[in-house]
Length: 137
Image 1 (spheres, one colour):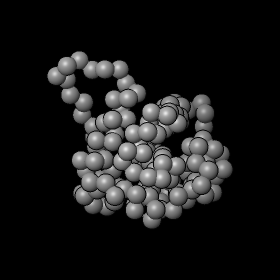
Image 2 (spheres, rainbow, N blue to C red):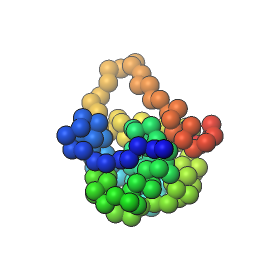
Image 3 (cartoon, helix red, strand yellow):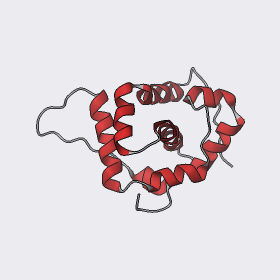
């Protein structure tokens, strides 16, 4: 049995998720996503579902089911049209590991301060790989 995704604005996890999801409403983020895939609105909805799934360590299909059932969750995530699970997996399958990592790194670089020269940023994509059911994006 999966945990219900009931939005609690006082819970620190929901507050952190809200801050993370704000990034997808920024114009520069939308421009970056548009360079890698289209349509943008569908891509952003899929990414929001995937991030929520990773954030709460649950299946993508569970997040989609909860979005269909709970209007407050749809409002919180800013998802007007709930994508189907097959649509999300189809979206993820368009990427290989390098292109997905490149998109995420560009988004991160656009919203964070510049790092010092010769420093590295490590991005853990293990949950994305395991939630798709294969090691190949």
